[in-house]
Length: 446
Image 1: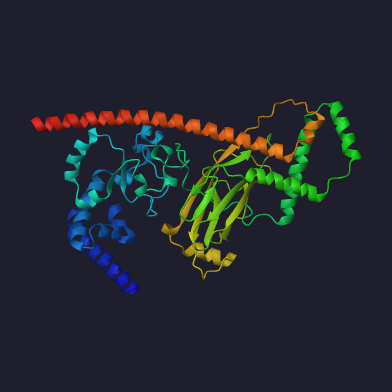
Image 2: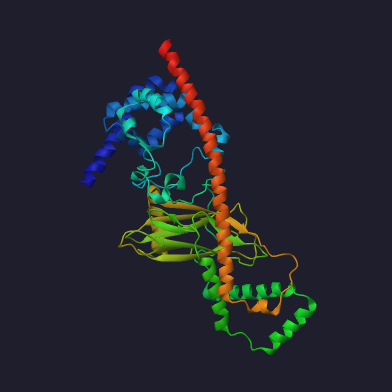
């Protein structure tokens, strides 16, 4: 059955191309953009999309291709760029893609949320111009039924959702992601060495902030005590890792839940914390392969950057700057994920072959920004002896309080941006409504 359907699809695509070339292109070649004609001959998916819209009826598909190609040339669709769209519309987030609907698509319907009543009369006129297929894709919703089409995790709070996504312009880049350094991460001895270096550098920075008299007293105190055991050092590292592992937000994708949702937080040179953590959780019933890419591959070590995650399991990915390089807010990370068949192996060779063969539309992608947390430590600092006896619990509490403050600040920024967005949107809708009402009365009385 599957083989028959594939053969039938191939025949429909071939017939559409042949007939369009013979019956339309020969007579109307000057009315089409050559790039569209070339794409029609090479892109099976494009031809199939037209056939699906016309229910695989070739005659109707040819008419639609003719109208579509003429319109595309008149509007110079192939030459449209980001500069063609008004910048204010991009800055307020009037147009952008984010999240998935309940069918697992980025955009399968036009869901109109809380349309103003004054627009209803205008839409009745517009509706008469649309065909039944287009009307079926329009869904008018309110806060009570919007979740019939989009899950709560992909809805912003003002629509009754819990999505913490914060739109910004310019958006995250979509290209130039490359494999980071040390694809499978450093070996265990390298990790231990880097952890030890972190501890030693932290101690060195602390000593530099103390006055000469206190340094002398402290060094005497350190010399009279027993050396810190390796187990104690590992315990300190573990407690430090536990603190920065606590997620503040989660992106809930169809294959993986990813924490943090939008930004990787790196400490500045003064704050001391050089690493960031990405937590992946497989929410499917199959093994999910994943790989991490970055726009600055020479800067970062990622461990692991190409592996797989079992059903229901979670994996920690450690990201750290390489060789003392500085983290930049312009750096981006891309996480790619795709489901694997149960019989597939998960070794390096199998994963390499899997990524060569997996269809693009089966790959989930999520992007992360880099964020540098500036140190709040003053340039001069006098520490007392009891400061060095601060418990790990107190340090963790202070860390959590700082994170709560950062999160509160982010929410306030979101609310301000949302208010500005609503004001601009309301102004635009008011102008549009007035134009439609004037046009309506003009047509009515003329």
